[in-house]
Each structure stands twice: as C-alpha cells, then as structure tokens.
Image (cartoon, rainbow, N blue to C red):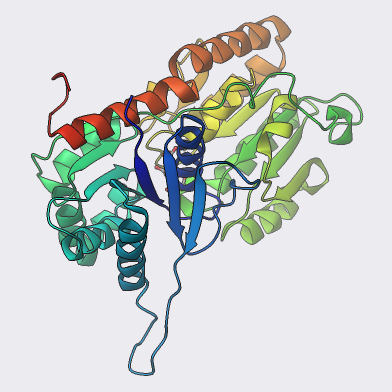
Length: 383
Ligand code: GMT
C-alpha cells in the first residue's frame, strides 16, 4: 500500500462531520499515512499526541473594509501553504460549504495537476445549506469541481444528484465507528448516578439544532414517563437547549431530565442507556445511532434520510415519522418493558456495527479512493 500525505479540513467543533473527519485522520495516521488537519481550531476529538498527525490553524484576518473576516480565503491560502510545505497529495474536505470551494482555490493556486481534492458530503451541507437559493449554485460548483466526491449514505447521494441535477460520480462511504472504543461494557459512570431507583434510562445526543426535533424528544419522553418511571439524559448543546429546558418545566418533567451539555467521551456514558432516542427531521446517516449500536444499545429514531441504511426497523430498533409521538412512545415502552427484546436488539445492534461499520474496514474504502484518484481510475477498475 502506498502511503499518502493527506490534508483534512472539517468543522472542528462537535458535530458528526467533524467527528468522522477526525476519526478518519486518526485511523489513517495509525495506518502510516501522514495527516495534516487544516482547521480554525483543534478538532475536539483530537486530544492526545499521535504519531503522523499535524495540526495547522487557519488564521483569519480582519481588515476595516471587510464586513467579516474572509475565512474561506484564509483557509484556501493555508491549504495551499500546507500542501506546498508538506508535499501533500490529497486535500480531503468534509462538508461542501465553504471547504470544497477553498480546496478548489488551493488546487488552482498550486502546481498544475499536483493536488487532488476530495469532498465528503455529510448532510446539512446538501439538505439545508445547499438548498438556500444564495448557496445552491456554488454548492453545485463545489461538488462538480472536486476531483472525487463521497456521500455518507445512498440517501444523500440520491438527494445530491436530484437537488443539483448533477452527473458527478458520487461514491457512498458510510460513517464508521471504533468498535473497540464504543463497547457495551465501556461505561465509566454508574447508571445509578442518573437512575437512583433503578429506572430505565433513555439517552438523546445531538448538537441541539432545530433539525434534531428536541421538543419531540421531550414530548415523547413525557408520554413514556406518564406510563412508567424512567429518566432522560440529554447530551450536547446548541440553540435548542434553552427552549428545551423551559419545555421540561412546562411539561413537568424537569426532575427526570438531566442536560449534560457537550461530552468529549460520549462512549463512556452511552453504554448505560437502555435506548437511544433520535427523532430528527432530517438525518443523512445518524452517526450517534451507530455509536449507540456499537455500545449494544437499541435505537428509536426517525425513518427519514439515511437512518434506515443503518438501523434495521424491528431488529435493532424502531423507526418512525419524526412527529409520530404515539408510535415512538409505543416502541420505547415495548423496549423498556421487555428485557429479552432489549437484549436481543442490543446484541444485533452490536453485531451490525462490528460487521458492517467497523472503522478500519470503512477507512480502507477511503484509502482505496485515494489510490484510484491518484492513478486516475474510477470505481471498480484496478489500480
Ligand atoms: O447532525 C448534525 O446536525 C451535524 C452534522 C454535521 O455535519 O456535523 O451531521 C451530519 O453528518 C453526520 C456525519 O456524516 C451524519 O451522521 C449526520 O446524519 C448528518 N446530519 C444531518 O444530516 C442532519
């Protein structure tokens, strides 16, 4: 296997695309590739020193004629500088806007035919940001000007082709999970801390954006709690957190809901959940479902987008329309009241995570893509 020098750009704050990009970089580094993160701050999952990993901070400059500091230009300049200094082969950007546009600029500034640009589409870059009329054309351009494009689910590939009327070849490479880190016995917190009377525990984790349907989480929980004692732990932070805390008070459930905020090591808490609840309005993949599955936790989630490519309805969990409160309540009660069912679902969830989404097997698909891009071949041809 050839080893590559890869520059990775992502949003470094908590959020699925940043997690995937960071875990990808760490796995590539373990495989012997040289990885350069080019981002505005240290990616949040990049904690310890790791051989073969380097971090380059994008320094934005403000000048009085600018309305805002032009981050996309600073990023392009930094990408080009890092590529030159470290003889980078591939600029792999996660999230189309503005990263793929900056990569296009960096490649154009660099030696001709020397730098490959790869864009991984994650979801809201296509389904929300890319649909804004002012961003639609440039999102299409960013996709079509990338040397290679991947999407994290079949749903997202189809949605991209349809929304942008593009014939660009888009490969599906799913999200992945480190199954040795996300394990059923990996908790470092006792469940009794949250559930002192032995109540079942439901966990929700997200970035608390409107798309996550946070009020739906609370309304479903409130209905379940009316039927049987249980508790809810909310992990993450974002604009919907304050309204959610207020809604808890209105629903009279604040005594049974705990907001933990962002957690760096979600794998230390997730395994104590009896069920993960994710009723998002959109979800191109649903990385947290996969992380819960790897911890042996069944999932009640939304049936939209790419979630059904990960969670098999009736085997690993249950999928419902995002606003089907009664359906989700029924599925949650069914799981919480049947230990055998929960256990069987949890085992199946773990099996699927290990067999289909294990980090090294999925990251090999990215390396294969780098190899094919480097040798100028397309999918399925030998390189
Ligand atoms: O879920 C979010 O809102 C964060 C977002 C992101 O870009 O960080 O997540 C997207 O990318 C993840 C990693 O590929 C996917 O697992 C999420 O499903 C996707 N989110 C949405 O489509 C809403």
